[in-house]
Length: 104
Length: 301
Image 1: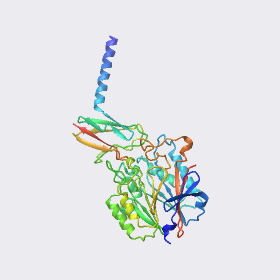
Image 2: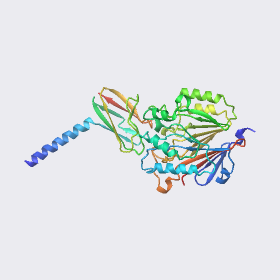
Image 3: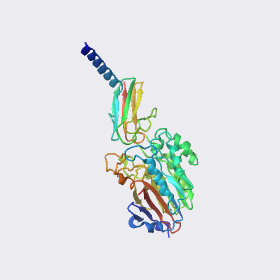
Image 4: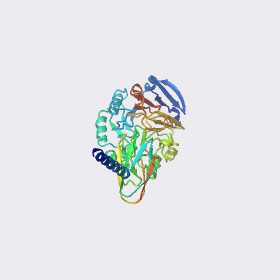
């Protein structure tokens, strides 16, 4: 009985984790690069960026429709994509850092 | 005799030596000789204060800024003014400009002239920076020129047109303004041109260049004595090209690696005893007529 109950909880937790991962894809900023540089997500997805560098970086839309602040080491930024399209962004401090989110 | 014949540039490399450059040839002399020249006036350069920086490369960037200011205030020759060559803040952290203004109240100089670095404008396209520092600049755009005792100073803004793939640039409007500003001057007018990002291609793959910098350099070539000062790369680096001498300044906050010496240009972690040798400010002496424009680096130790 107890074992069966725990199994249900475990299964539910795993299911929720899987849903969370799909809903919040992550982009790592590492060694002055966005990884992955091309990310494809469904409409309504919230993307999370994490700065893995010591240097500050930003996540800034090419058309500047949205931007993070200067992200310090380990800081994160999230943005929700609500309309299908191809969205390019860059780091406004290191503009050679560029990447794309495709929303379907 | 032409003024450029007298042109010399002195830089203390931090080891107690002074390098004198005449016509591009470097020779060493002592710091005493450099300061004994008897300058008509002196100004100082402070750069890359990065208020808000909290990385491991320097856990006390406000402390090293404070010590840099203290170093300026004990100079024998009181600087007439101070040039801050940008990156006042670290990514426009809230309150950073206020904190910096409070710190710089301790500087014993009549005024401080500012130009922005990319950290000061990246988040809001320069709105906050220009609202605070735009007054007195050309059409509130951040760039400006002024004359001080026969020397023409030009402060350029090469951080406001960052876009994907392109870093430092002045843009056509500023280039047109600069052309007009310089047209009025005779070739014997000594020039000091300051910008945040270096005007010459120090290391383009790290963004250490200005896309239209060559156009600026072209406009400067007809002058007999040009000193170009910049920040951005957090280290002393010099180059002489004809009558133009380029000097990159240290940061007061954290050092960066030499071009290509690390995988990325991120803050450089060094041993505790080494850090203060890599941070500091710069003083520049100008002597009218006999003309040495002496650039003296002042590391914290």
